[in-house]
Length: 268
Image (cartoon, rainbow, N blue to C red):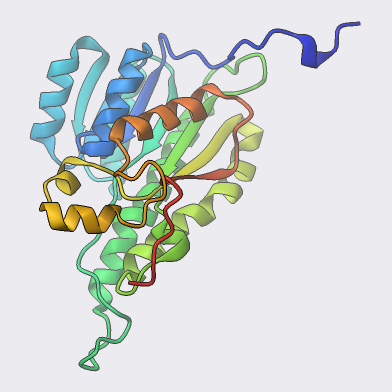
């Protein structure tokens, strides 16, 4: 009898003929992910609040990409993205990249003022609530897929941050929002196992998105100073490669994965 370990490995997750949704798909990490998934043969919905940039990217990539303008916290917008993906093929991949922050600051500022509650709530909405909302609706749609030979129907990749593990001074809102995404990973993986949907999250460090690369040279050196190796910002394409690895490796599930060049955020 041939042992399982001696069998040749063949990835079971194939993307040709399948569809994906990338939230925040017009941004730096999102657009790199869209491009990589299209290269792998998937049809991709570029789901982003910036309709113009989404449309430009979809036009550039051709028939395998479709733009849907919308907000991850709005059920009707997510439903439109799901419908668009369904027209392209079985919806098998969701990559939640959309997020961001509104302001920041200490829990109590040096002048004694308490942190603004509205900006905290908005930052949680943009990250944690948007990620949860899109996942719950897309996973429900994935449940209708025909499973592969191992019972898999779909994969969800969420985007957190190492700020969710070691938030710096003044990052209480953003750090809390990203920590919430990290906290979703294992419960979601357990919740969605009966329908054959895997869930992982990526926690990037300092990534060289167009916004980050636009900072001045002095600020850039400061941002890169604590990165161990390679001593540079991460490339969006490296984020996309990790998304690919998660999607294509059927044994990756319930895991939060750092992508940071061994960076550990200092307190300030």
